[in-house]
Figure 1: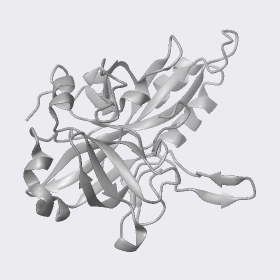
Figure 2: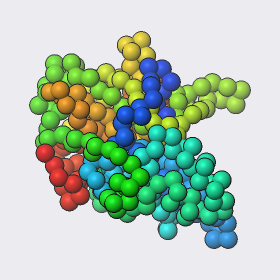
Figure 3: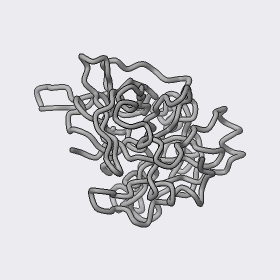
Amino acid sequence: MVVMGLTYSAAAINTYNATPAPERTEVGALIVQWDDDGDPATPDRVDWECSGTMVDRDTFLTAGHCTSDWPAGARFYVSLDQDVQGALDAAAQAHPGDPAAIGAAAGVEGAAHTDPAYPGPAADPHDIAVIQLPAAAVAARWTFTPATLPGADELGALGPQGLDATAFTVVGYGTEEAQRGPGGQTHPGGGVRMKAPLGFDALNPSWVRLAMTAPQGNGGACYGDSGGPNFADIGGARVLVATTVTGDTPCYATNVVYRLDTPAARAFLAPFTALP
């Protein structure tokens, strides 16, 4: 298994059974500005690193590994653009050599809060974080309806048969599945919001395993989709039940996602947003 991120091990959605997701306006990209060479005389790097979801007007939910282990002084921005790579390219052209202006043009700056228990054990790594944003600045740039979080143990309450019958969808900006070339495997693409259906595989105390197998009509997540949403259709409602964290290295088989209906996840989220 591998963590689904980019520069700092932070998964585009696979090419198979995937489609653009312009309607998922609550899903965004996490942009990071950081010193990537240790030289204060050179401009910081600015790039999108992970995916995430607005769960209220000022709270962007993502993964803990997306917001941790950055050099001192790293700055975090959120973009809800459909094509975040295009927005960054345009910003870099408009503001050459000015990383703060590039970040501000492509996204809205916020404050990162990582679960203090991250990284925990494999059974529950506490791999969860939020970016607190100025609501007015976000509203001035994008229109969205915040995602609906699950109630306590909402997935567990469905039971095995209910979970098997539940439709899951992953959304994110990540790269494509592995492509073989002369230099080995690469993961092309990324930077555009996409979605793909998933099938239920297994439920663990902190995790949901979702099947990405193409013959069953599924797609899945890859590098850069970390922190992004996995929605479940429950009782006619679209519920954000888990966030992408890890999966198989070539991004062909399994999306392993962190449950949001557990006591640990809910305890972390409670100070930042209202819970059902």
